[in-house]
Length: 139
Image 1: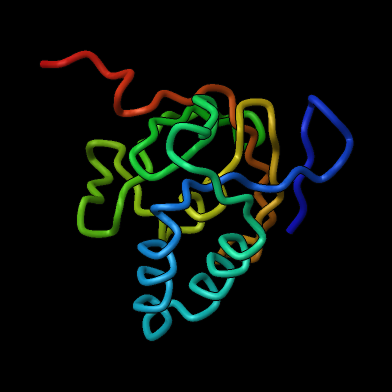
Image 2 (image 1 turned 180 degrees about the vertical axis):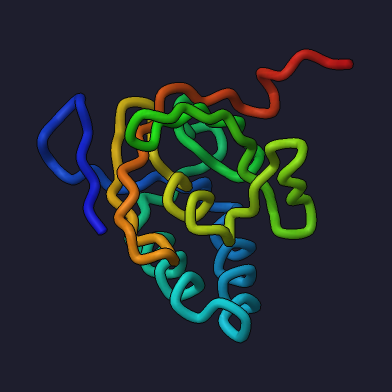
């Protein structure tokens, strides 16, 4: 697993809101029985993240609840990253406990990550846009 960014050639740390840290760890721990490899990879990502107070979170970072537009090779998709109980693939709401959800968590616009997928291929995901729940117009 590696990270690159079009902004810089260094490996930037992921950014996660500190109040989500405990919840994300608990979700990953609960997932160990069903998906031990993915749970372990998510825990590793969470542990290496730069934890920030809510008011210090950059608006362009993928977090729980974010709507993210990303490119995987030549395909562009927009999904919302949600807790497992809120996942609904037909509404493009993917769980943070899926390979794509775990890979995108904590990345900012312009960053790329190479992620080993369950089908043994390596996906390169690039974050193109992030919209936070507070950016969504009321219905």
